[in-house]
Image (cartoon, rainbow over all chains, first blue to last red; front, top):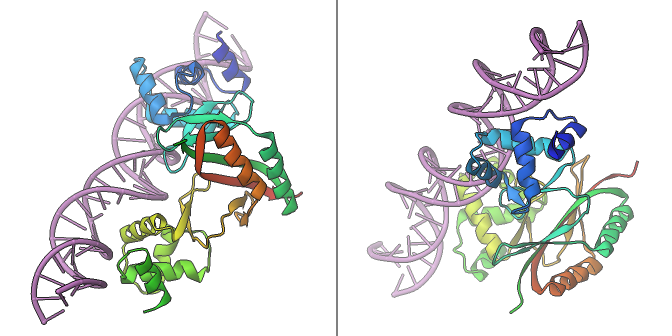
Amino acid sequence: MTLEDQELKKVGLKVTVPRIKILQILESCLNRHMTAEDIYQALRDAGEDVGIATVYRVLTQFEAAGLIERHNFDNGPAVYEIDRGEHHDHMVCTETGKVIEFHDAEIEKLQERIATKNGYQLVGHNLVLYVKPLA
Amino acid sequence: MTLEDQELKKVGLKVTVPRIKILQILESCLNRHMTAEDIYQALRDAGEDVGIATVYRVLTQFEAAGLIERHNFDNGPAVYEIDRGEHHDHMVCTETGKVIEFHDAEIEKLQERIATKNGYQLVGHNLVLYVKPLA
DNA sequence: CCCACACATGCGAATAATTCTAATTTGCTT
DNA sequence: AAGCAAATTAGAATTATTCGCATGTGTGGG
């Protein structure tokens, strides 16, 4: 009964090889913000025989369970990362593709205020800054 | 020599029927935030014989020329709108799908500051608030 | 500890959005 | 009006993701 097994049980998902392996890959953090394809390749490199459809299905379930977050940067494929409970937004370098995480309480507060001012309740947001190195 | 003709000339694009029609549809503003498919249908409804590939190509050129903006809400298809020079962000109602535009100078300023603090220059951003009606 | 059965998986086909190809047509310069 | 580069077309190709279905497998109840 590993830690991954427990995490899966906790959210009501059966403990299966694909789920354990995918969770391990995401936790190993080699590369935060992996695409479904990245994960599929990592599985194949590790000698696991998992179909790409299963990768997508499992990622969707993990997201629904709150274990991971899915992000869509620009128009590329979706990327996934472990949800450590610390909310943050992203900055993407247009030259190197590097992704930097940041959090700004002020911006969060302003978003709430804007929603309220318009008669709505904020349920989520998506903020990505596109940047390039200075000079 | 219509207004659309002049706009196209100004950005260095040949004046062709598809380009004029697409620009007119976007300007007519029936529905801001149209998808490529919406525009394609509007053209067909108007009896114009324009291919979907041309719609995509023209939209890409218009975006490069700064005539329009492209946005990606969540994981749906891209939407396009005329760029009237007034920058704004979007709020999408998760229940009705309604899109509300807003602008907040404070948030814009904070974004610049965050990029700078990390050694980058802000070149663009994508901010979408997902909201639902208050109770 | 075993069994049934609901749930998972893998494969390949299907879909959706978008881009490419290659042959034809069209706008603009002279 | 003629010529050439640029634009258009339909359809094929790509990319990202989901679906259908036959087969395989964890897990709770006995």
